[in-house]
Length: 151
Ligand SMILES: [Zn+2]
Image (cartoon, rainbow, N blue to C red):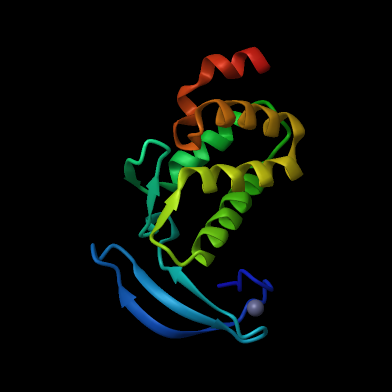
């Protein structure tokens, strides 16, 4: 488990407990290098998190939904799945740093845009145009019509 701050690979577990639905173990870790503390989950796709949408509604965090949105933005671009997985891992590290179980879709959208901007300009523009119109990266994959215009 790498430290999200300095990327050092050795950390120690300082606290461990099961999440409420018992689907994953939440661990408090401390980096052996920079000594910063962070929270990890045994199954990162099961992050105990809720996404607050622009209209105020709440839905459970779903890594796959974010992945589908990013994959759509990266369609036919020279971007490997590994790069996309890394991008999502970095986004999840940023989310974990907030230490809140509620996160706005706006915040997730801004992290995706920031990441894509560094990876591929076309994917960034595709994502940004949909995101800025709908303020909802979670429903990005539904907005195919707009993507076709940009392609
Ligand atoms: Zn560290």
